[in-house]
Image (cartoon, rainbow, N blue to C red; front, top):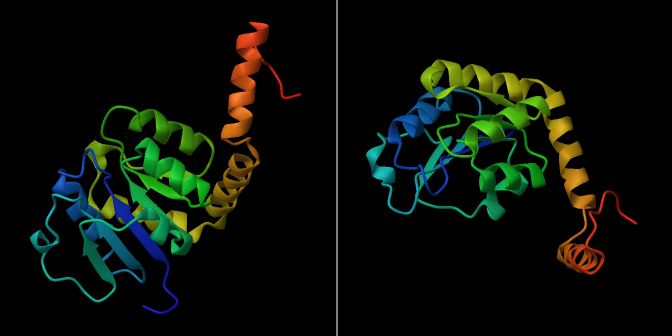
Length: 179
């Protein structure tokens, strides 16, 4: 749909077998004024989902590097890879944490004001829709996500990391601030 926000929904590579959550993502937004892209994983089947309206695209895999520059919102489980990649692009998020690092990632993103969390026990199409529309409708989520993106970009890259590690090994003293 021209002019509609692009929302990307995924459960990453480790928990994408939770098709009931992916179905809730689709049901939540399929009838909203958004373009929704959902990835179901390399072993998932897009055919499992009933025919969708033209604003919904369900695929096994699409590189996030192709989607994120065009996205307005990311809905996920809050896994580290998806979360960090979205933040690196300044994208606000809706998270439905399931396990492992995801609850902590979700709590940190909520505290930073870049995400809304829908607890797994409350993850219904209605609650996901409410969270997604709230984030899309409040520009402060995007502004804070862009601030985090800028802070991440200002961090040193691999060369600086190697230099800090070499300094730590040489001096055998903690490094508290950049010099």
